Length: 270
Image 1: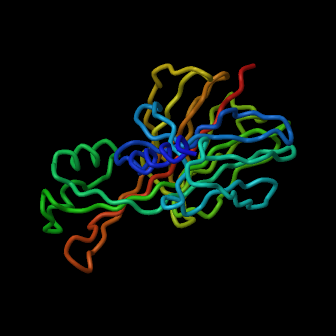
Image 2: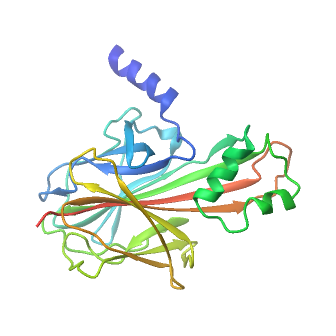
């Protein structure tokens, strides 16, 4: 009991979303047998490398699985690790879904904001910040994470699709069953509409390793679609971020709000 309480206390201290780092769902196994337990970690880090974080109700807005057209809510307990735990599902493609609550960041260094907007390729930034008459330090940004992960149950047949997140990445092919010789396609949606001409960051590494990830940048076309090559035996993470101006009602409220979309999957070895 003491050990579990200590773990929970430590989680409360360290498990808040870490700004400017990716947040992703990391399945223990991307391919499981029918009715075999499904487990996945929350990870926060950079370069597709990050520690496991516990489930905490205070940071969760949505936590579930989409399978065979059904939305299945997962009941989790504070301190659960792995954060995703489900007793099992029948054949088909399972889409793990998690949405966080809003978190806040107060910028004390303007260069960090500049580095962030340049890295995520937000056109017109940071000029817009200055045009709005905002200060270079002491301003607040809120942010929210929207993560998905594709898990093959049995034969893994099925297709990803929009699951109703404010921002999300939708796989247009099934990496467990489809021919990907012409590349993988994903569509970025925001408020249900395609995000055209935005940056998509693709992280790749060998399955089951902690190798340094290869990171490549792509852009979506007019239909919000990005196409990139994939290889068998590799694990992938796809990332897209949006930054929205906010007019604060009172001093100290956020002046920016960022939305982070993330998708993970494997391409099985031949």
